[in-house]
Figure 1 (cartoon, one colour):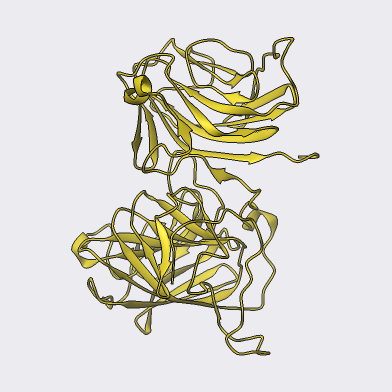
Figure 2 (cartoon, rainbow, N blue to C red; figure 1 turned 90 degrees about the vertical axis):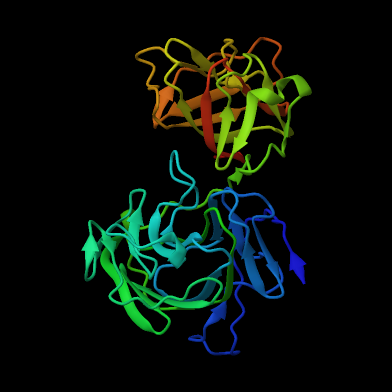
Amino acid sequence: MQSCGFALVWLSVSLAAQTSGDADAYVDLFNGKDLTGWVNVNCAPETFCVRDGVLHCTGKPTGALRTERMFENFELEIEWRHMEKGGNAGIFVWAAPLAAKGAPFLRSIEVQVLDHGYGNTADYTTHGDVFPIWGSTMQPFGEHKGMRSFPSERRSNPSPHWNHYLIVAKDGVLRLSVNGKEVSGGEKCTWRKGYLGLESEGAPTQWRKVRMKELPGGAATPTETADAAQGHRPLYNGVDLRGWTVDDTAKGSFAAHDWRLLMTKDGTAGHALVSDAPFGDFELIADIKLGKDEVDRRIAGIRPGGGILFGTKERNGIVLPFAEGSGLTVDTWHRVVLRRRGATFEGHLDGKPIAALGPPADAASKDQGHLWLVHPGRGVELCNLYVRQLASGD
């Protein structure tokens, strides 16, 4: 059986115990048919799919698939293999629900999944490194460099052979066993409760026998726990412009470039991408980076009717000037969070409020509108485009 698309549902994962009535039994995290219980973080619908009980990953784009629910203390068994020499992937433990600012990866403790063809250096190995990424921290066991724990033995098999990982995560301590023997890990991990994720990073990978046994725990504090998912869904799939409408004259102004969506350097100001789906009250997250030639230009935010606009022409809603003092700096990733509630718009840039302009007098406050990305006439990189509908009280 095959299922290579995502049903974008936001339900708690339902895991059926392999041994009925045994609360300590391992449970399967994949049902062998589809991706029920898992969430597409920032990939294309076909990046991860299940065929004949095996989870296949194309490796394109760079991104992640994660569980719908968090875990704290557990034993996780998983088998993996790379289908190409030099393949790269990973397992995200105690992870965030969304990608980190300016990156396709999840803040987490990463358990490295590398094929031998990638090479072994003083900085990394292909035998089961464990290390924190994007804000997480860890005190590594054994031989290490910085917070990266190196394996005590070389035990992994090359492509296309299968490898077995056992990850034991308990009270902020993570231990990795490769093909039957513990080799690496760390303690005093922060976070110590969060989501589990599988990484897509350039080459095809297969996963199977993904099983978990949850262990007693529950002592993680709020500061030791990942942010809870709020129902955001990705607006960019990392491989093409599906989900957006662009006319023939504007196609050269936008380009899919793996996890980054480019407003090309030579694009035409005013050319626009418009979301296929309309939205009413919504929250939108977008990471942006301005090229070095963007000084003294600006991008605008909300278009009347509920659209988000990145462009040079001033519109009602949110305006982000490129000029000095705006908070935007060149060659730096910034996170913009914009909200629309009726005719009211508000926004934050890296956590700081952005001044909002009022809508025109004839704006229909209850109407749904499409999200706009309008080219400013200079190069801009975008990533981590997420949207969620706002319910009353959000």
